Length: 183
Length: 101
Image (tube, rainbow over all chains, first blue to last red; front, side, top):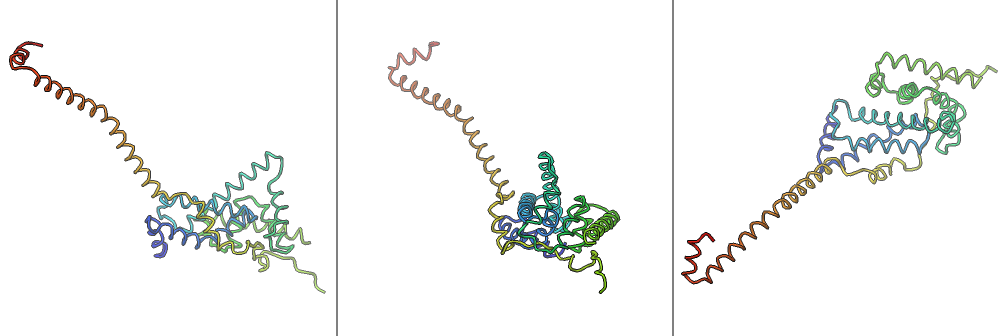
């Protein structure tokens, strides 16, 4: 934890500076966390809900943050858990209605007004969305966010070796799907 | 004409996220979020401790009320007795004092 984070943490612990410091924390992390969630759930409205919940959870849990990790890692963990819980609930809801959430999501993605890609990028996103959640999470963090395996390991509490293997399998699957769609 | 090379993940075009956000989304995010934030835990704790102290004080007051009433009644009785004695002549007063009445 660098001195800026320590300073921010001290401000977060004091009732007089809490609101200002929390605003600073949100503004510093809202964008990376937004994209982290968006890559998992694809749709803007769902991302917005999860991001709000993430910061509300962080706000409520500020007193429990012991500084064992950086604030960024802590926020990423909350966002990841919130996203996985959201996806699980969506899957269950779709299942009770006899639908497939993955299929629903792929259809929604094509019609999403905030999707800004061409056909090839749509193919890639569809291939990513077809991966199991944990694998998708690892792939997105490595491929788009360019996080190191050590950073991902801290967020997901998974060994570097397992992450490397998972990323390798995910990349293979995606490349196969892209080739199969294009050729 | 050479056949088109199949795209791979190393293609920089694919590494761009094909998503966008509504205009000014990040500028207004905190403003919207702050409306949803509950009272901070530290303030909640402080408020809870004030409520606890107020409840304890009220309980103490309620418990001590019968005691105050009893003391007041006792004082009024004693005052009345003294008044009665003051209305008696000396002989009757000593007679009453020496008797077991």
